[in-house]
Length: 343
Image: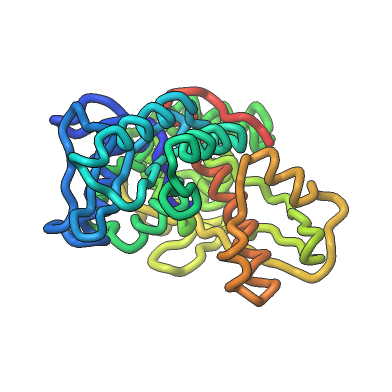
């Protein structure tokens, strides 16, 4: 996904005091943008099992969040309790459809429990109880980013020790790592590395004496991007990334230093991730099923059915894998951890 709603990236803006309230505020802002602010109201606690109500359609929304966002799983009991409470107050707050608005996912077992509770309450699960997970809210963010951008904080400040570790992980010889560390430590020079696949921005200490290639290697390690290809057996295709550093949309030569390119402290460069696909499987890389299980990704079947070109489906799948890696690595950096898990 292009957007991530886990704890490191969701701003808690007063009067909100915790992640749950911040998530509810983001959902409210997106629903108001989607459905019209005059139609959507938000309830203060106690919420009677409903956080947000569309007065025109009588759609009710209950917001549930977990710190890990799309990488986490939501507990079942609070959702079951909210649904029961909403049904108990359905006369005083009449609603037609009940939506769980979540930044994470339910397990299959959890969804079964919620569905069973809906049946016990006399509801038709497929018609009256629905689930809007992080993919839905990410698509809303795409449409209304200017309305909600202040609620998301995607700039991560990277420490010098994390840069040095990135050089080590990129397999630079120790003497070069020491030399680059000294160059970085000599000046108060920072750059901001953006990318074309997510809104993540990395503010990193660097040196104008280091090259574009150095910058690319560091960014690749910090964002956890692997150059390995992934095979998709059901499509008989495979895909992998190609990386470059761009300025104003133009790829830069690896040997140029940042100083030679005129990049001043505080300015932005972009890590450009191009995804290339081809017919046939790549036996040297993980299968698509292994990769998806590892990253806990779910491919929306209806979305893929609408995309009839195998190449587009292949690229979309690989993009989701890369985005998941990037968000996971950025979350570790934001929490001050020195390295993210290697996939």
